[in-house]
Image (cartoon, rainbow, N blue to C red; front, top):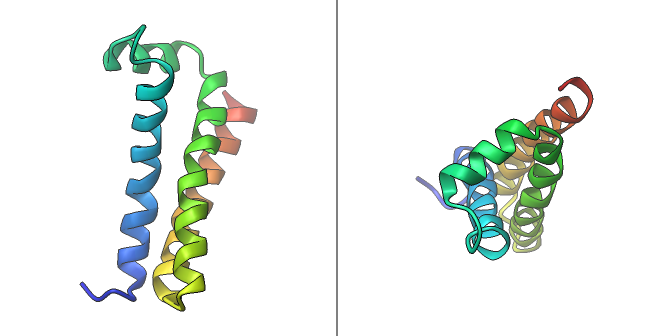
Length: 97
């Protein structure tokens, strides 16, 4: 896969928030909850999901900024597309669940 690729950006933009979610779990909840219990908490308190998704998208914002600053535009666009999808999901969780 080329370094400047829309597909690479979409893959990165999809996986980076998952890494952000796992990092958030490790720093905030790992002392108190197992990973399964953490996901059960999210399932039972859906109002937390939109906030946590929003925090996870900060990782995408940093990656997007980096790729755009070094002129790797197609990858940056892919990250933006994935971020827009995640943001839409966060808004849906906030208003419809």
